[in-house]
Amino acid sequence: MLFNSKDFILYFLPVVFVLYHLSPPRFRLLVICLASFFFYFTSGAVPAIFMLASIGWAYVCALVFQRREHHAGHVAIAAAFPLAVLFMFRYLGFTLETTGLTNYSHYFDFFLFVAVPAGISFYTFQIVSYSVDVYDGTIPAERNLTKLAAYISFFPQLIAGPILRYDQISAQFDRISTQRWVPIDIIMATRLIAFGLFFKVFVADMFGVYQDAHQRIADPTALDNLYLIACYSLRIYFDFWAYSTIAIGLGKLFGIDLPRNFREPYLSKNPKEFWRRWHITLSYWIRDYLYLRIGGNEHYIRNIIIVFAACGLWHGAGWNFVIWGLYHAALIVAYTLFQRVWDTWPGALQVFLTFVLVSMGWPLFFLDVSAYLGVVTSFTDPSAWSSTSFNARAWILLSLVMAFIFIFREDKWLFQPSGFYKITMNPFLHSVIIFACLIFTSWERTFIYFRF
Image 1: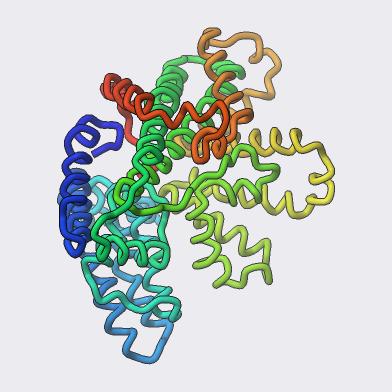
Image 2: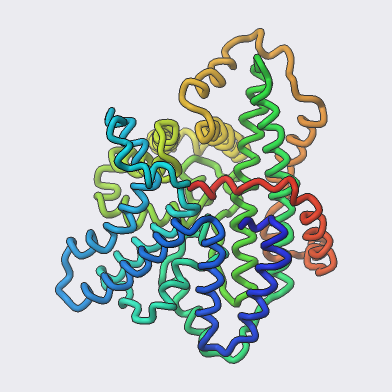
């Protein structure tokens, strides 16, 4: 079920919202759980069963091992099952192919022929962080199974994040389970949902149409490939930004504050800052649960390579994703080595170069390595810059959206509207935007990060 579908907007969300707010406080978490399980079951019974099994495993392991002396093996056991499920569904085929063991693939048909569960990497990381935090003594083991299940399965962020830590939401769950009335900022919630839907349907999905058009070009020129790179860079930005924005808005409908996962990452002045602004919860998860635990800055270059190779694999099972991760590792290491020089350049130049370098890596998300190299090498042929298959309207749209990113600030027009931007607080405007998005639901495309 997609956030930008009629089933979700017209049926699922209103029913869950009414049931939640009419239920006695002690039943609200149960409503969240049942709604989240139903939401996930719509993507397939098998993925949902494995998610429930992973929740049960984490719950039991945390309770059992908390009573004993802490041991690293306890963490490994607690994380073993959810990580094994993640591996079997997402990485088994890649592993068999890489190791040349495809002749044995028929033994694993069940995992190889079932669609990869949506959002499995996201909820697996939440289970792992919960288990590690319990054994580190940061948080106590949760005895309320419903509360733990609600944390892992909360449908607004279940499929594509943000990746939550248990201590970020535990107190909020306690509050909604005890307060008679749950205060909600309905205007802020609907504004976030409305604008998230707008940029998903009319910007991200529109660039998806242009991306498809590029695939139909028999012999793309350098300008065509340049358009493809910029087009996909804007598409993935607004696609993931839209999901994260809608998730925050949905959370607010239930009195839950979810963290921002984006802070205008294309305004970053260097590759290191980019990762403090893009997919923030993933960046800090990797820092806290991988980078620092393998030594952090003590072996900086080695550890940066390791964590970004892992980051690439987290995004997808393929060498193109690994290379994408290593590409970002190289950017960060290069920036660190030449930081004194880089930081002396004008701020606008730093932002432009960071945007270009980041955008150059995105095609690895949908192209194999050979196709990607073909795109990049086309730029070295002077004769390939003479024409383009994209019309003026396509280039104007690209330019306008890019200008919007670099000129307008989210804090001023979306999160804390002031001055002229107070118009975005108008509930009538929100309704018009949502209605317009519903008209074009026939265009609906799955969020890119659903497959991660």
